Amino acid sequence: MVRRIITMTEGGQITMPDKDVWMTKEEISDMFGLPETTIARTIHSVYKKNELYVHETMSSIPYPQHESEGWTMQVYNLDMILY
Image: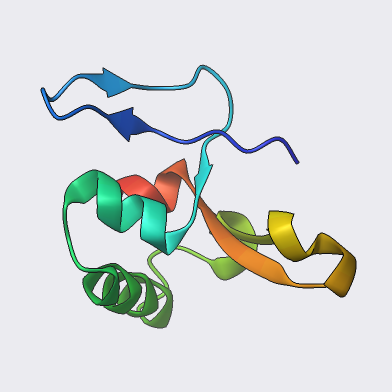
C-alpha cells in the first residue's frame, strides 16, 4: 500500500494528494491541531455507532522502522479522516 497524507503549513496552505489518503491517528491529530486522545475517542465512537465500518476505513500496515520485527500501525482512510 502506498500511503499518502494531507498536510497543512503554518500559513494554512493545504496539500491534498490526488490518490488514496491513509493517515495515522498521530498524523490526523497533527493536521487538525487536536490531541491524539480526542481523535482516538472520536474514531472509537464512530465505530461503536456503526456510522462507518472498520473493514472499510481502517487498515494495518507495516511500521517502517520495525517492518522486519512484524510491527504494524493502523491507518485510516479519507472517509474517517473527514468524519
